[in-house]
Image (cartoon, rainbow, N blue to C red; front, side, top):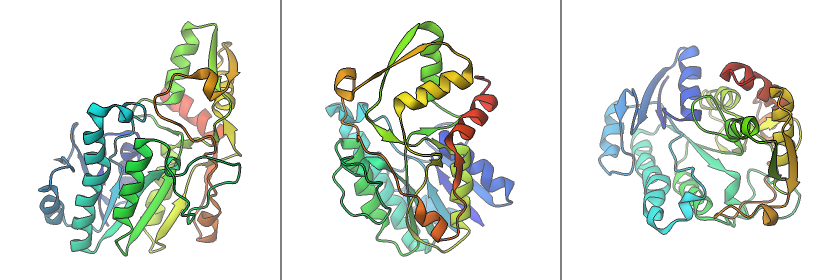
Length: 290
């Protein structure tokens, strides 16, 4: 299978490309920077013809603006929209012409984050709290016009190839005696290495639709996550739990409830991701942070 991967220079795209090649698929790497097969700006309309010429059997769309707080700045909003909405629309047009499979990575931020019930993949009660969430939801709406689509919502992502919460907290932990971390936002981390395996599993099937995918191991707070990071990394930094209101540093509103129901994966025969503590241990070992 020939698979076009957008955002191949990012955390997830990097691991998706590796997984595709490991299984013998042809991975076409694209991004706006890096050592790629093609340097593509998905916000430009000419990308449609470029993708048509590549003639992939599937597109895994990992490219996105993911700087949630920076997305709130007025000077960035046009660019955020161009990447997350216009870019997705351009790729959808190419996929429609090619009649190829399309897998779009979305986010828990499309929901309002209220309550304590896990969000189901086919739940349509969308109410994003921030501009990033709004644009990712608009991207979903573009994708669902296709017949052969997968929309996979993920949360709290970490991987080897880029910045993430784990790297940030370890750097802070090495230079501070204590750190404040919010304990009222609840969800589950997602390791890109594990997620990449699932995404390739998906495009090898025709089990289209909406899915949720994070690592297993129960729902936790960012505080719980940080405590476990320091435990596994051997750091003695004191972690102080605070509310989002007490923390008060974020421009964008975050969902309090990022619990994602992943039962649809099992129902459709997909292997769910390993537990997050196991994923964290493997990540720390692989990244040399342990």
